[in-house]
Amino acid sequence: MRRGAVAALLLLLCGSAGVRAAAGPDASPAATGAARFTVMVHGWAFLTSNHQGGASGEQEFESQNHLMLIATRPARTWTLTLLGTFTAEPLTVPPQGASELFQRGETYGDVLLVDRQHPHDLIVQLAAEWSRDLTPRSRLRIDAAPWGEPAVGPTVYVHRLSASADPLAPLAHHNQDSTHISADVLTAGVDAGPWSVEGSVFHGREPDENRWDIEQGSLDSYSGRVWLRPGPGLRIQVSAARREHPEALEEGDQTRQTASIDYERTGPGGYIAATLVAGRNLLDGGLVEWGNTLEATWKFATKHTVYGRIERVDRDLYELLNKGQRPDSVPARRTAVDALTLGYVRDLPLLAEAATGLGAGVTLYRFDERLDPAYGERPVSAQLFLRLQFGSKGATHHHHGWLRPAFPRDAAGRPDSRRAD
Image 1: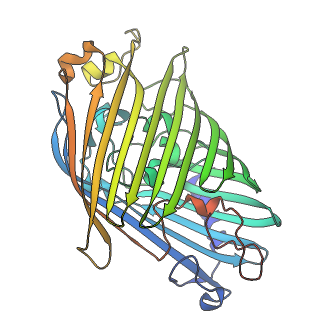
Image 2: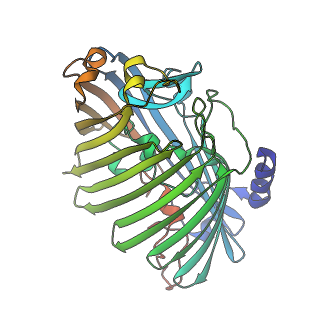
Image 3: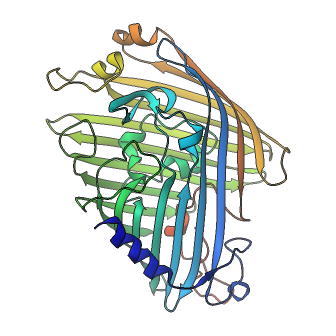
């Protein structure tokens, strides 16, 4: 499906209804009107002094940031939800990416990015969803996105509460959830009690180096995902995708498989959120690339947040030593890299319009001694940052709960499609 066809479908979904912002997801339908949207806004930004240690590291100042908009309205027996996610990272992150030791993925100047986290595109997501209740405990969802997320992987790290205090991307991003920016995505799903089952078709190629456009392509890839919510705040997912020629510099297709468990609980003065993710890419020639992550964030006593992340990722020795794509003539030699990040954020009353916090984090590594010439024996990376969060009342760091509701009830006992799980 071409970009124009998907865009036309989105226009049909939107209709000619007006849009008016409300205070948040619990705004009264009477206040917005039957033909009006209820709008939720959420955004965050890190202003980061980033020091990556060792011979391959650099010192930079950058900003990772996202702005999310969600608009919902009833449409006869359906509920229409429009989602948009945007970022200024093409301006606030170097075009070759933010320095991050042992990171790998996408390209700059037709060269594989190694030790760099690429900036996200200006438009991260444009999507529309139609949903309707099938029974009091089941719901059908149909999604169309010229630029968005197919049904594979955990909740992407930029929307995970467990990752919300850390300015850096997980090293396993391209083993787990990098598909959150995909072209021409069509998804159908059914929520039934604690279960959700969904499948997608989409264009499998990774984004190119133009960070300002919306790309297009044929529906050449597919994915499936199952979610289980066995108890309050607990979610489990397994998923897989077959992607046609996803990498610009690598020939062949790729199968991605992931499994994750995430847990969130609020309490007096804060919350605790934790996520465990295992992901792997199956490549042509029998190569397997694992990327595993355990991360957690704990906010307590209203003003204090501690966070941590432990990762093990598979990397190619040639790429880490030569900072470029391994030629086909060079045999693959895999090695595992371990990383441990710990950090702290202290909330400060700096702005009335945004929650602000001053934070710092440090990362330690363990790796094969054959990498010592490129990285040194014991590199240490550190960040000092100011974090800002803003948005509608009731907005949270992650908006994907809107797409997988736990079927809450309104005051009359009817399913309330406006509230998140």
